[in-house]
Length: 468
Image (cartoon, rainbow, N blue to C red; front, top):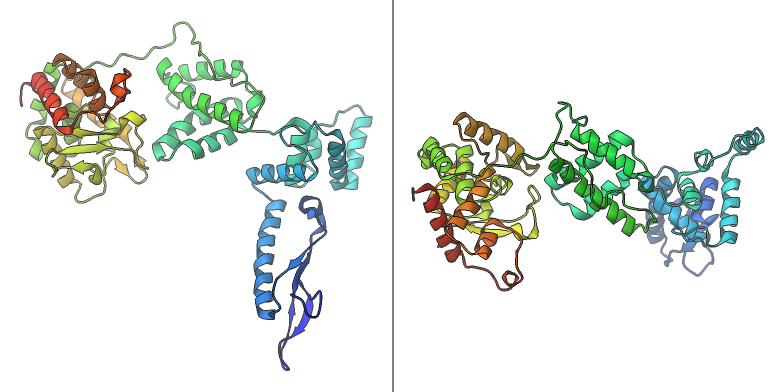
């Protein structure tokens, strides 16, 4: 702390101010806490403030001191990610490559000497005593007595970077997903894995863990209901695990195998997915007879009409925003596009789907019922996410009561059958339903116009329901 006189009647003490010369700029000078010296790499922090103005210097000092306080607090009690990053920086200060620390044995020796110097005397004595009695001392026995960043650096130097399944999940979600539904789809498989076999370094997982995971899901042990799931659902859980592990292995240059890669073998007799039935002409007729007057129906029935006459996926309809609905265009259409509240399945899923007169009537009715909300179906979709499963349960229950066997998703398959029945070109089907392009020639050009698409969907719907 340095004493300075601002006027004949006023004097102040300014901490960390150093007047290195009587004519040059003021300097900042602060002693590093003893326990942080190995992490900071210096005993003192000192640098020029670039000004001779005392008030300006005081403001700069306050700013630098505040930043250092935050940084030192992170060094003392960092997050796990912060510890790892600081550990890497610490190894680099000693000339050690965090990805391959064993290359320079001399630098590694200096670092281990520094680690030993960080251990309190009584801890060193306890560890020596353990070794004398034949009890091997593990790196973790040492690391737990070190500051967090030093402990992380020490573990990396001894065993390599410890990248846990939870780290893998968090980085994958941050890099690849941007909406609530996608986050949930990526999180759930990891939650089941960690609960079953633990949050472990990626390299410690084995194919035996994969087999155990598969059997666990098939048997329904992951669910509070105890109901087993089909092999197709298990594969859907494994897909984000495979992708996330592959990403971490690449990004962190981990020298491990991806245990989720390759074909997953299922036990004999494992439950297969039940083939979803497609809507038939009789199903469509029963559906519209049960719905009745579209202009006065409720929101769930509006969803059914839109599903029937667009062939879109349930989440694509349920997650529509008001801004996606172009009811006043010369040819009314919906724009199916990804939102933070609802993702779309693939890059091909983004598309414009024309509306038949009945689909337009259903959408207009839904917009009126939504009463100006940003979402067309606010009972199922909000900024928090899209509850397509809730909608599915409601709609399928309604269909079942009316003895319509296929589920709501069956209308997507039904539309494909209707388009096939009228011999619609394959690229028309792909463009209307958001499928990937099946052949090379369909990958070129802007695609069919909205007018041409409407002709085909109207023709298909007319054949299927014989009502337009």
